[in-house]
Image 1 (tube, one colour):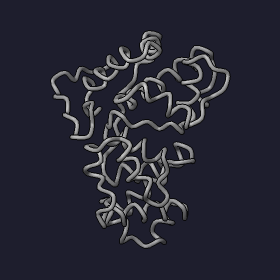
Image 2 (cartoon, helix red, strand yellow):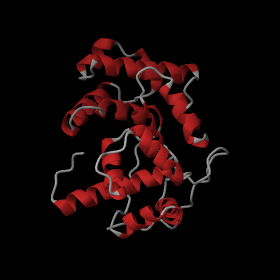
Image 3 (tube, helix red, strand yellow):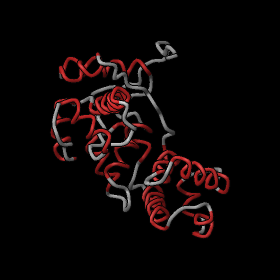
Image 4 (cartoon, helix red, strand yellow):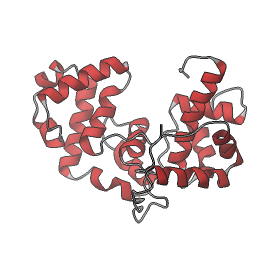
Length: 233
């Protein structure tokens, strides 16, 4: 059952962000209504049951680390590694990660590439080159560029962090395969759009591309459940 959140105020956007942050249900529903006005395809998807969920992750370095840890491994493996990592580093800050020896991180189950990515991110945060605390107030494209400038942080990681950890209303992970498949189904195409093609398609959804991503993910689940297919792109 969905709980009402109308008592929580909608967080105002930063100076470079048009829509409110997606940190309460009311903000998400404002975005859904705006998308329905912008694009009849979005209105149809929502009418067919593609109701997006808020789904929030912790912000800051801990949230970013959680996304990096979970990449390209099973949910169970990610949970096990995360449990070991937070057991040895209960205060998972950029400073704590930067000071942790490699043996400690390897012992938690982190691969060498993920250790390098986390160290690069921690170093950038400590140096002030990656201002995680203020990314929500920047336009999505600018915040994205700042994140991918860090070694090991790719476009998908950057956009998922902006969307789920910060609630940025215009972040859009165009490289996500489930999003691409949902867009294919929604638009009635035979092949999935490339990341570049989906990015171009998403221009029509600004400044609510983040909400559009949530609608597409919801539609992907609806379509697969309707067809009796497994949830894999």
